[in-house]
Amino acid sequence: MTSSSNTYYAAQINTNSSHKSHKHGKESGSKGPSVSKTSSSSSKGKSTAPDVSFLFCVNEWKINFELNHEERDQWLNSIPPTSQAAYVKEYKGTVFRYRSGIVTVAQGYEWVREAPGYEGRITFYDPASNYTWVPEPYKTESVFACSAHLPIITLNGDASLGSLLSTNCRDGCDRQSLNPDDDDDQERYTWRMPHFTDRDNGVSVINSTRTGVPFVSGKNPSWIPSLVPKVFENTYRHENRRSKGLAGDLPVIIGLMSFHSSRPKHGPDGSTLRGANEVFMSQMWHRNRWEGPRDAPVRGYPETPEDNPRGFVIQVSPDFSSEDMATINTDYNYLEPIRDGLYQSLEDLENFGILVEG
Image (cartoon, rainbow, N blue to C red; front, side, top):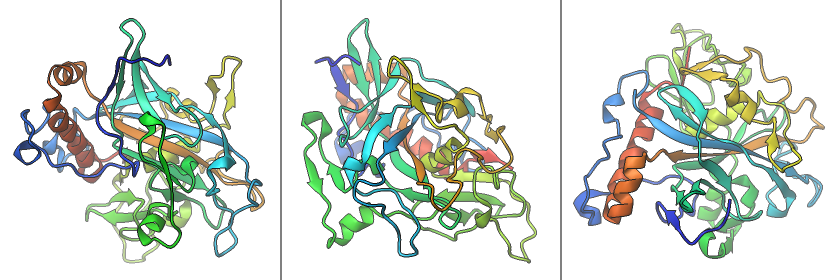
């Protein structure tokens, strides 16, 4: 993408690479409406919010696991490197749009990262008008498969930044090292096993914050072992409910789907061939159903304990409509209420919707 002075940043960059709650309305001094018309608080109790739309991109890295010697956890499982320098080359994913269960390519959007060690962003660029729109991410998370004994781990943030925090990438990416003795810093860079909460109706809500239990709700979910490894199935004898679906953390669910892709490579023009793009191009996730293979990923997971971990960095951003963009460009005071309304619709989708039925 050509650099341009006509760049519009939809919000200040979020240094934790994950959405936090924002106040709006009178408390924030906003002059605009308190909630965007595209929000959907009425989605509670429904399988999906009918008008929910968001953008997402799945990226994979060529990783040098030998740079600082292979890193392992306390049980000697191989884990992703904590050194930013180990993330050598990025395979940029296509930006997709999810709208009411349908996934399509988001025309005009692309993944932009100035260089390794800089925070990446989903970005809209119109070459005709030289106009750039950079929405603040809703969430950025990393999902890795390490071994049969450590099948899936997640990180709240971009693993390729390593032990660096990016605080202002637009102005030279002022970076700050994590302090190993600081509890808050350690909490920011902590790999976790997925956990699940139960809505008391057989819907499993996945999260990357270790909230709940490390097993799903209900019996015989259609997405085990295709998306969630078999080790997470519910084995309680008194559990008689059938599973009704998978919900929760959007980047984690999208990352789990991405393991059904072949390894990426760069084409002659530098574009990414194969990789996670092929999962969503081929409509394996369609109308909130998993239409891909029913078995565990054959090519996606490490096959032996000697194989290196494989994983993805997934970013989800709100999908501002053209009317939203025009309104915000006319009056910046409308940014926060429109953005917060879009954030709320995504929170509702995660908390009350079903992203994979069955």
